[in-house]
Image (cartoon, rainbow, N blue to C red; front, side, top):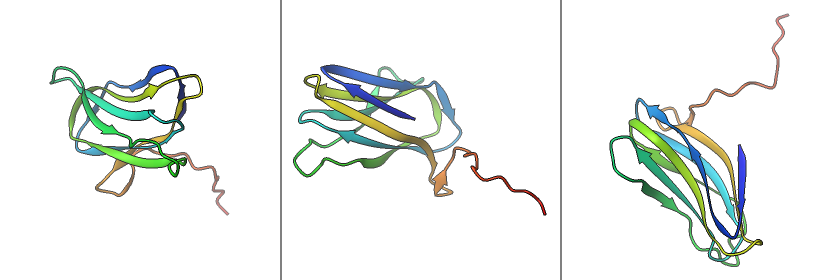
Amino acid sequence: MYAYAVGPATSTLSLGPFELSRSFAIDFCYYVASYGGKLAVYITRNDQEGRERLYVSDNVNGDKHHWICDKVYLNNGTYEAVEFSAEGLRNEFSYVGLDQIDVFDPLQGLSACEKKSKETTIPL
C-alpha cells in the first residue's frame, strides 16, 4: 500500500478496527518533503477514551530527504484504529509519502502477513 498527502492541511489514513491476540508491530516507511511537515501515528483502543500518539517523525532538515522506515509496537487487545497522520503541511508543495505498511511478528522476526509467491512451482 502506498499513500501520500499534499498540503495545506492535515490528512489521516485510518486502518481498523482490528484485534491482536498478542503483541505485534506495525512497520511503515515514510518520506516528509517539507519543513514543518511530520508523520504521526496514533492508536485508538476500544477500552480507552480518545486516541494515543505512539510516534512522531523528526523535523526535516537538509540531509533528511530520504525514505525512513520504522515501527510501532502494539500490545494485545482490541483496537478501533491505527492512524497515520500527515501533519503541518503548510502549502500545496508540502507532502508526506507513506509506504510498506505491514504487520511485523517480533517473535518470528518477520512479516505476519502472508505474501503470495510470484513464482510457480511445477512438480517434475
